[in-house]
Length: 495
Ligand code: ATP
Image (cartoon, rainbow, N blue to C red; front, side, top):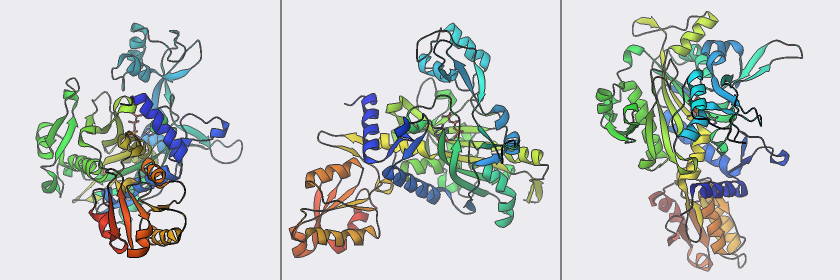
C-alpha cells in the first residue's frame, strides 16, 4: 500500500511529466499558489465545466460572463472590503507568515474556522504553539488580513481603486436587473458564471487545492423568499437519500443517510435548498461517479458560516493525500444580503414585482471551485497496480477517450490506423501513437486515464476488425470497425 505522502508525490510526478499541471513560471522557481494546467489537465477542466453546465443550467438558468476586475463600490456593498479576512500571525524569529487558524488545526487537530482573534491568541498561547517553519514560540499577536488583491485603474497618480474579484458571484448580482428584464421577469431565475477568482491566500499549499488564482463555477438562484419551502420538482426528489454530516453528528463522525423528506422534517432544511442539495449529490455520485462513501455534505455551525448565510453546507470529499475529508464545494442560502447591499450602495432599487408583490429576491448559491474538483478526481481515481499506474476516470472526464495504435509501424498498418483515427477523432477525443512496444503504449494510455485503446493489426487488413481493450479490466475483444460506436456505448465506462 502506498502511503498518502507517496501517493501525492506519485500523482505530482505523473501530473508534471505527462502534462496535467505544473507550477507556473517554473523556470523562475515558481510562485506558491499559482499553477498551470498542461494539455491533459485543461482537457479535464473543460470536460468538468461542460458537465457542470449541462447538469446545473436547467430551465430559466443562464450563463453570463462578467469581469474579474471590479470597482471598490462592489466590495463595499458585498462586505468583502470589511470582512474578507483571514487571521495572520508572523514568526518573530524567521519572519514566516501564516494562518493562525491553520496552525491550530494542524497542531491540535481541532476546527478553528470562525474563531475570534481573542480565542485564536488564547489557544496559541495556552498550547505553546510553534512556528511550523523554524519551531520558535515567539509569534506576533494574530491580526486580520484582507485577502483581496487591490489595483488602481488608469495612469500613474490615479486614485481609482478596484480589486481582483475573490469570487465570481458578484457578477450575477450586478447583472441581475438586466437579466431579469431580458429573460421575461420570471422567478426563480438562475444566473451562472464560470470564471477566475483571486485570493491573496496567506499560506497557499496542498498543490492546487489552495491557490491565489483559481476558477469558480457558481450559480446564483434568485427566488421569492415566500417560496423557500417549495419546489416544483419536490415530488421527484423527496425520497432521494442524502449523505449528511450535521453539526450534531460531528463528534460521533457518523454520516447520516436521510431522505430529502426527512431532512426537511428533522433538520428543518427548506425544500428549495434541498432541491439543490440533491442536484449536487447526483452531480458528484452519478455524473462524476465519485464513490458514495467518499462523499458527504458537511454543515457549518452558526459561528463558522458568514452572518448572512442562513444555511451553509459544504460538499466534503475524502482526499487521503490531504489528510481526510475536505471541502470542494459549497451551498449557501445568502438571503437578500447581496442584492440588498448593492441596492443600498448604488441607491438603485433592485426590487422586482412578482407574485403580486414588490421585494428583493433571495439567493441560493451553488459554489464550485473547479480546480479543487479537478485535484479531487486525480486523487480519487488514481490507482497503483503491480505493473502499472493508472487513473480510472469515468470516460466522461477522461482527457483522452480512445487511443489508437497500429501494432507495428510497417506493412500498411499505420495507414489503416490513421484512417480509423481520423474517423474516431471526428466524434471522440482520440490519440494516435505508433512509437514503442504495444505493451508500453497501453501503459502510457493507462497513465493518462484513457478508458479505451484500439489496436490495428494484420487481421484488420483482412476482416476489418480491431482489438478493443478496456483500461480497467485490461480485457480485449475483437470488434468490427463499423460496430465500434455501439460498443463504446455498451461498455461500463460508456462514452
Ligand atoms: P476555504 O474555507 O477552503 O478557504 P471557502 O469556504 O472560503 O474555502 P468559498 O468562498 O465558499 O470557499 O468558495 C467556494 C469554493 O471555491 C470552495 O468550495 C473551493 O472549492 C473554491 N476555493 C475557495 N478558495 C480557494 C482557493 N484559495 N484555491 C482553490 N479553490 C478555492
